[in-house]
Image (cartoon, rainbow, N blue to C red; front, side):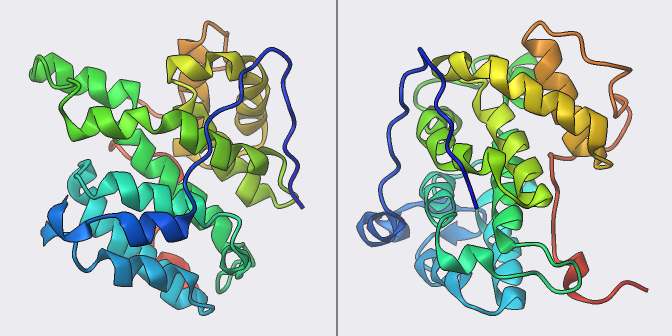
Length: 248
């Protein structure tokens, strides 16, 4: 069960268009992916609604290769992310993953968080350092970052989900979304969620996302940064196909 809690004085974010509209009204063939045009994306995206969790997770991995290969934001990333955010409330999102009894919804939210990390303030600042002018209004990265208020409204209901994995993935996605100035009014209550991750989570990338948000927003997070600068750079809540088979 999910709960959407209101916060006084915080304006309501715009709604995402329904996922069916995104699928039908996007000119996928005109959009760039990592491997050419996005003409195959409607078929890929539709497979996320299959009842078989192995198909869902494998499809999400394939989608990540098409629209997020090498941590890059492509033209097709924008509508693909809108579609994934739009199916969070679909019954197919409640399918349980093999061997870990976790709803696919947690995996979808984790995928969103990982993709958001690739266009986060941290990554944009790093790119600006080496490529001045990297972020401009004409770039696909800027267009993707403009989605954040709409995406926040899709993610926010799951901050209070009954399943721990869904809650944690939603919090990490929300922390990254709240970098947008229009979402600054949500940061105070998100800081509470961030501290909860630092207190309870064993996922280092998620802990680093929580620690980074608290630091950026002027809070005093407990302890040192969970991952050192020398650690391999990974997005939060990284999730792939590794748990589709039993562990050895």
